[in-house]
Length: 291
Ligand code: PMP
Image 1 (cartoon, rainbow, N blue to C red):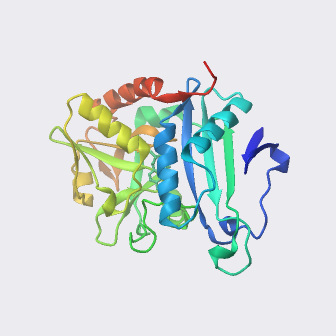
Image 2: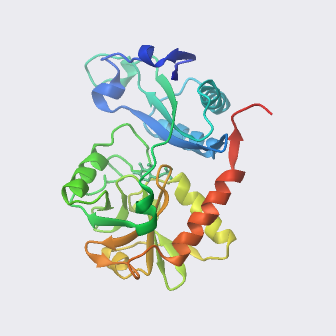
């Protein structure tokens, strides 16, 4: 596999960062997870825009234009013969000293990995996920804003540990007001009385690219979509529930804290949106091979 590292494609064995890189020492950096479908990089410009906004929020200047970044992603996919895959774009603060001072890190490290995709088991899509609410609260937006897709994912990792310890694969994270924020690595939607609802990002969610796409798809299909503060009660009494994310796409949730959602199987709207999403990815990507 060829890895893009700060301007060059190098062999995987040579793709190494310094032990003084602040991405490693402090989780100081930002990243994106992007999918390629049918030879196209899905919503590449939107991902790159979010990457630059995350970087801006942590005062990290990426020494490349957005256009150059898009071109580098496509080039890395091409070099690895990617048709359907998963791309990880990582920007670290770069090599510094053992101290915190980020200004001593002179050059951010830019890493692009274009790999195959590891899908969740097919049964999960047919049966739906069981989830639990966890005690680890989502980062306070005035501490580390969850809109920043930073390399510091300890908040999410600790929530994931709780989920796995409880025997499930995903969890619901709440904010410090007890409002629903998101899952450990996905956004949340519910259906209630014909209206699709998702928490506003200020409740403590990443502004997910899949979330945005699903909101557009639903709106185009004439399904009302609102951003609304949700409490656990709203999840327990939802008619349908699903999660969205680059890796998970659209996946039904059929059980929250042992409350069965709907009839306990993926709901009709969830299945309809999964189908529409499959079509949407065909139309909305940047071609990897020059035409
Ligand atoms: N929330 C969190 C915490 C995430 O890490 C992700 C991405 N895996 C998402 C939501 C979903 O975002 P996207 O649709 O952009 O992948």
